[in-house]
Length: 203
Image 1 (cartoon, rainbow, N blue to C red):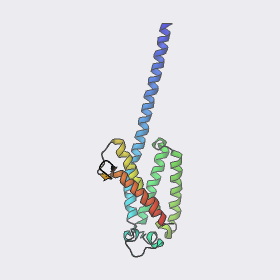
Image 2: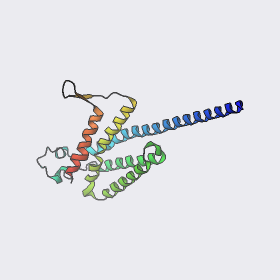
Image 3: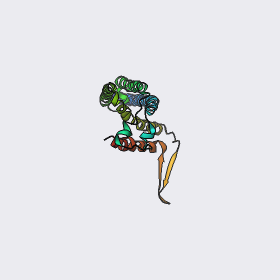
Image 4: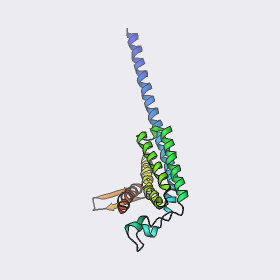
């Protein structure tokens, strides 16, 4: 009886150990998938952002021009000189992310939602492509990817414990000191500008 109990305990221990090892391996696999997707997006978003910026008249967009009406701020600021290149790299970015999520659904927390969002975005930019007067709208919507880039960069830096390039300190008093990592500061500032200020101007 003692031998049987000992064998049963050993089997239970082996089973528990196997489950723990499997869980750790799966967790490592999920983290690796998400990290690879983050690095991929950090790279591919750079040409998307740069090509988008090349299609705008920044004197008008930043308000330095004397023409400050609602229409000229966005529609009038769009030049579209590099629109075809920008549209192609944007489609590549969206399609590649769709394929990535479909092949590796563990790379995001909610793969179905992300996939449907990319499908809707792809359909929208394809439809808008057919109407030249609304090409600026693609650039306007994709400008938020600047904020997305800083969001990913902040996550990657935090995960690897890499110190920020710059730490901004705001001394409120002798005892109170507010510290911001550069990536966090840029993330929040671009979030406010693109999602609040710039989007409100388009209404």
